Length: 97
Image (cartoon, rainbow, N blue to C red; front, side, top):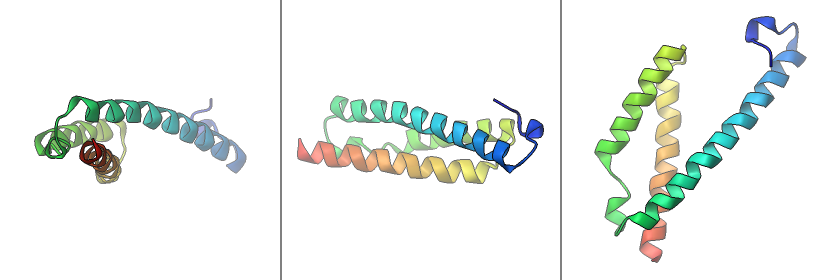
């Protein structure tokens, strides 16, 4: 693992980006296991979308992004997409139950 400032060429940069992408996929896959578990604990499709919880997650993500030097708008956009997929997954599973 190299820090960005330690990369001497584009091969170094690409290697580190690939490493991070792999770790991101692993973390998203782990997160998905909890999303998949959540629908089994809910009773109806209406419970899939909990607006106050969505906003709570977004607020935490934005704060973390700012703290880490990541554009908050980018983080929020990504998380709204991730959350949207989760809500859709839960709604579909709950309707099919």
